[in-house]
Amino acid sequence: MADTFNYRIDHHGSLVRPAGLSTADPEAVDAAVREAVADQRKLRSTVVTDGDFPREDFRSAVLDGVSGLRRTDETGPDGLVRWVAESLPKANGPLLADRAARLAELTVIAPKATLPSPAYLAATTFRAGLGVSSARELGEALAEIVRAEIELLVANGVRLVQLDNPLLLAQLSTDPADPGALSFTDALAVDALAVKLDDRPEGVRIGVAPGWAAPAEVDRARAEQLYAGIGADRWILPFDQGTQAELDLVEALPDDRDFCLGVVDATVPGLEDIDTVMLRIDAVGEFKDLEDGAVSPSRGFADVASRPLLTAEGQRRKLVLVETIARYCWGNEF
Image 1 (cartoon, one colour):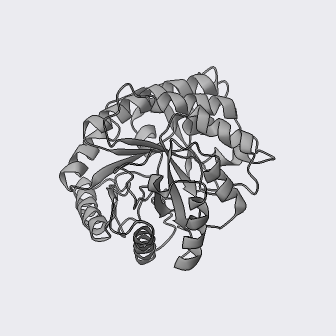
Image 2 (cartoon, rainbow, N blue to C red):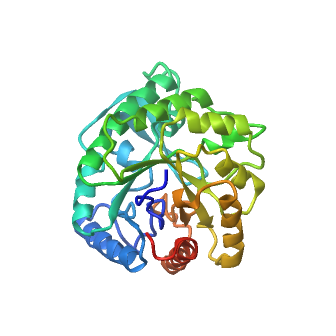
Image 3 (cartoon, rainbow, N blue to C red):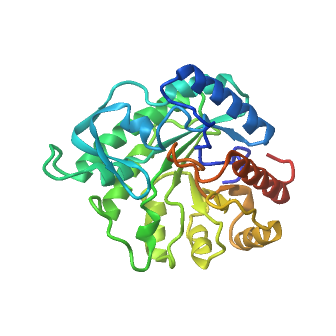
């Protein structure tokens, strides 16, 4: 599916916030976003995001923008505050579209928006006995909200939308993890609803990031089920550890889908060896058309605002490396 809209130099969306930045200060947030946009342009990224600066974590666009979900006092080991669904959610207005429109005014580079997948939210917020009959019902309600938001984002100039579902890759293991409140099959059906747009203009990509790390071994049949079950045209896959499972994930992807390889580890400050990364990408080139590819870090740098994975300087060095790798792969043809 090679074309000119692969957005070769990508990142997941969340960036390290400036020290002391508070979402309660909208003027400071706007100033920080403008500076982040300028930095992304200097780094020659082919996408631009607001760094998730206006939000507490990568789920917040939905959690803060709908009714029916309640924040609790509990925090998980990943640093995410737990929310629970007490009724079927309803959107209180646009989730990201207003900010995305302002983002588009700051740059000629393609604006990108990242949303949590409805299946992920349903799996992590459903609790029996609180007013919603099933996680599947909750997921379908969330999918309608997310799908409507994607349509609005595209109408406002966003050309790359990414849905994050960190739970999916664990289900591709030869010994899959417990899916929790939402089965693997139901999760695919729910996320499929969110990406099913009636109209998709030229150059628009709807992507899915199914997790931050590949399992130890990939069940090929389940991987094929994943890709067939969700009609996304771009898959953002971990590719920073050099494992056979990472390669298997890419090989199982249908030829009519784009792929973005997370070639540098966003969790450690040390820089990857370019020759090693290029050898891994060359291996992909043996069975995939690299013209359908892109590169990025392995995950967001601050999916939880208060828990950045690297320093701002460490982040910059990783993004520079991603840009360098892209030029090794594709020259200056972005």
